Length: 296
Image 1 (tube, rainbow, N blue to C red):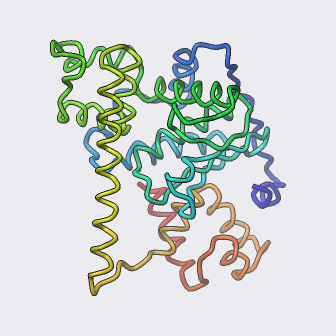
Image 2 (image 1 turned 45 degrees about the vertical axis):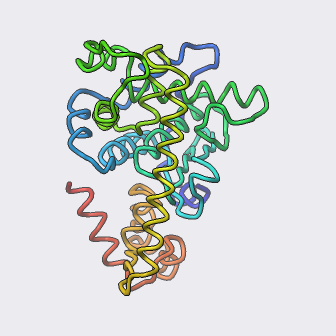
């Protein structure tokens, strides 16, 4: 952030003046953010078609970054440690989401959760589990930010109007895995987040939600262990892609800012390498990657 401020001395970023308070209805705050980020039906169609969950995260990240917010991903922290954190500053506030062992749908929720922190003008380190032990004031903030994120990504009116929800006649603990997965993908969220939203509207039970959350966590841990064992036993190792990783972790605005400073002879190629964590031989590929992203 300090580097970005220094590099933008000729074009001062806009002040982040978006506001919310803990006294507000999270649903109303969510509606404001949806309008701000221009989330509509076309987005949902694109997210539904993307089984990986990257479309929602990439789209919302770009729109948050357009508000002069720095959005970083960290592959040094994982979901077991923290979901993300926010640094609430008036100029170039920062959102960091965990990338390591973290599916894109969880990152999407973390992104909007941290954006809610910025609107409260409260920095914080976050864990998306609503029942985690915290001091009362921290708990209030985290629950509020979770509720706002849910309202942004799964608006009440839209979710309740979904035919599989509106026409559902089964017991509250009878939601099928197929319906849960379909709805979650439509809104670019995890199955756990979708079920939590149904619980908010009293369309399922606390026991069902907890059981499914435990099931999803066990499934994730088993899958992660299988991948680790497969990587150990395989003679082939997956090659890292430093240019792609740099763009993914630092984001287009920051990478572009560093490269533009190099083009203007304000820093050396060695400086670029150090700031972005890539060897100088990877910088041409990084330039190609950012041009391809901007053209997409």
